[in-house]
Image (cartoon, rainbow, N blue to C red; front, side, top):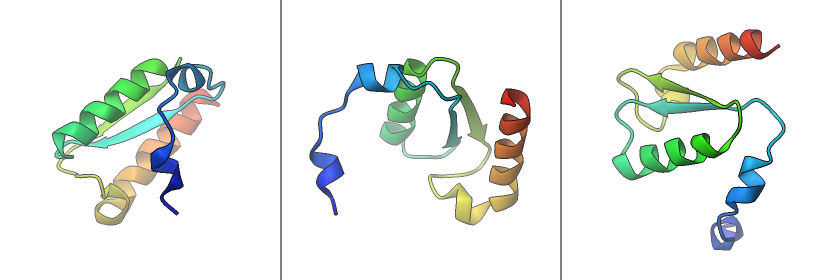
Length: 79
């Protein structure tokens, strides 16, 4: 279902997220997607960006150990 793409972006809703948020961004992700992720991350209070070296948007498939390490580090840091 592609209905989610028809919804307008709501920066106020994103800025109100009460949960620590980790944004995993592949170093070689296409520029527009990387920029969008960085913009959204900048709106979320207390968010963290982890730049995944040598990875694109599919790092969960190409580097699952790296993704797991970043997620575990984030969970440990944010308790």
